Image 1 (cartoon, rainbow, N blue to C red):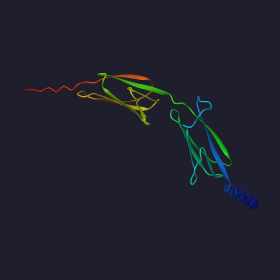
Image 2: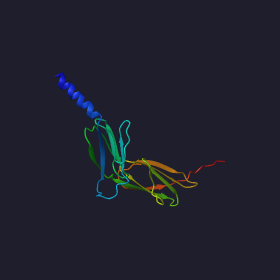
Image 3: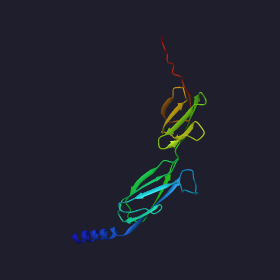
Image 4: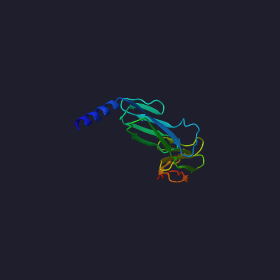
Length: 172
């Protein structure tokens, strides 16, 4: 029994010095072939660096991975490779919604921003963000009270915003 255990232990020690490669093969829901250059793949293992969408490490080294792309749900995980490993990772498209602010007066300045770095579409009073994103909007015009509010987006939405003037009464 001791001989078998020693043999097994020696075998495990010798394989630990062998290298294996972990490769991520990303795909996007609804996209066949084409350029996936905007897909970001990150592979990490203590003391090792990735090359492209692959990383080479000793057998048994834990490799963590993350795959992301704008407009798609990110995925992450970890693998404990005992041989060369190819992981197909499919990203699912996010459901996107548009929020449009319709201010009165019409020449009011509208600013919209969404969590995660989403910005309003240039030249419009609209922003398109994934479902569940918190959007903050501000409508302002000189001499009128600005209006600011936030919402979590769950549908396309058009919001009417009427700016009011502050009236100060002066008594004699």
